[in-house]
Length: 163
Image (cartoon, rainbow, N blue to C red; front, side):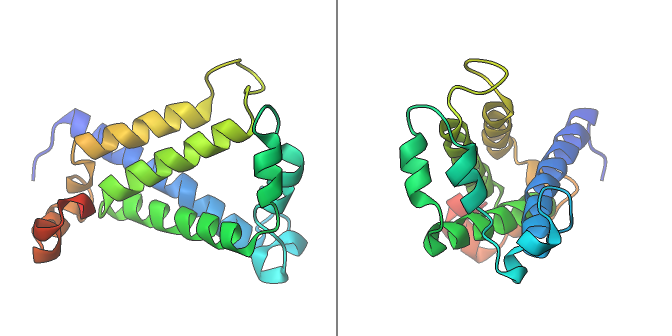
């Protein structure tokens, strides 16, 4: 298969963003010492969301996000989201769902720190969200991924939102 340079670039962007989400999941689960210390790992009984929600939020929506701190539902939803978004982007399957849910997660994280620390409007969360949505329009999972095969399955043919 011969791909254009732009297709390779978009595939590497997709895989790179997938790795960012998957790495965040792995670091929070196992406490690999990058963003999460071993004693704060989810497997060690730590909360993957409480620290950020309690102490990292700011702005007009801070109290809403602080009220979510410690919720098992929020923790499971966040962690499953990180895992599934990461895997979908890496493998190129379910890129539409991963792109839109990832963009929603980025929007929520942006709202939690509004206004952003280094720019009153724009930060990496918004840029990641825009890129994630953009990946849903170009069938980026078809290049260096399983998206082409996935799109040909009967399930996806019936339910195109799964592409």
